[in-house]
Image 1 (cartoon, one colour):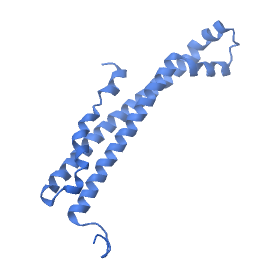
Image 2 (tube, one colour; image 1 turned 90 degrees about the vertical axis):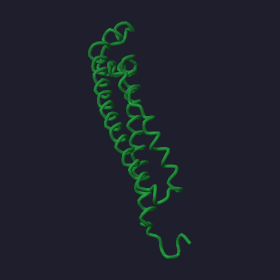
Image 3 (spheres, one colour; image 1 turned 90 degrees about the horizontal axis):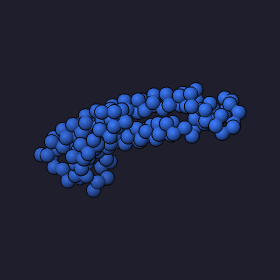
Image 4 (cartoon, helix red, strand yellow; image 1 turned 180 degrees about the vertical axis):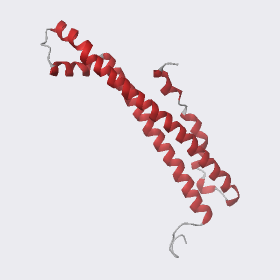
Length: 150
């Protein structure tokens, strides 16, 4: 499998089972509470593993982007500038890097991996919050004043 395909191999649908249970928190009884707590812990584990893979892919995408920018600046810019009749200078090479097709594609992949990292952080946070909220509901740790919740 090529490096470009690895990002697509992170199947976030595996989290759907756990995330769908978040909606059920309000209707959970004490008898089923332990099962849901376990499910939220398992969901956090799955989301954490996916986040680690997404971070790894993001680091790889960053390295590929930096490599593509270096190649564009050092190797490709000169020929492009010469073909357009533009004087070869450091500033002209920098401007070329932004339009190089390989760099543009690498920036797109980097943006995709950043979005995946953000998504996975969010899902991990949702599952942590659900776990904490369920513990409060089940064990009465609501921190309410005597007049709240009447």
